[in-house]
Length: 236
Image 1: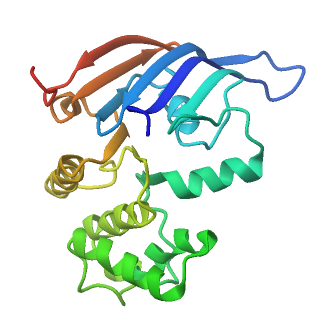
Image 2 (image 1 turned 90 degrees about the vertical axis):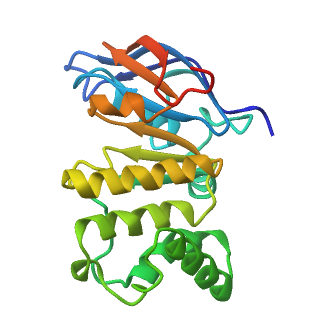
């Protein structure tokens, strides 16, 4: 395995809704290396390109130009089917809105990503139960999302993101729908996951996150204008 879990080289992204509309240059040539095991925060004002960059890191979108290496493999030019397989096996996502399936139990929500990977039913259950215990929800397996608090729903979403043992955990404003106390508890869980060796990339507006991460990358107008150590940087 390469030392860098992700490497982005001269990546641009241009959107154009139709021929009559002017092109929107979301990313203007970004270079970014993410070492394995790093806790990285991506910040910037609305329209800075941070969501576009996260979508590219998460294989939800492709660059217009440039290269993106994930675990040493250039995924930028993969077709949709192959990109979907990479996304399912190597990436975990946590969103502000939780995105749980209301009709399913907690256990079944967490199992969902494993259905598409040929994992046996017994192993799916074992892995889902293990990650739910890790996020302190081992006693909520048969509950449904509407029976949980906001913090518990986000813990289910984190468990779902972890169940495929991803190379990178991507979190998009994961505390945005939570009160301060509950949000702090979720961030403490991210701290624990990072201490266990997980690579985490978090998109956030929260200026306090620069003290929780090892590294802070700030975007403006589609370019990185600041790349500095965070409060938890080794040796800082």
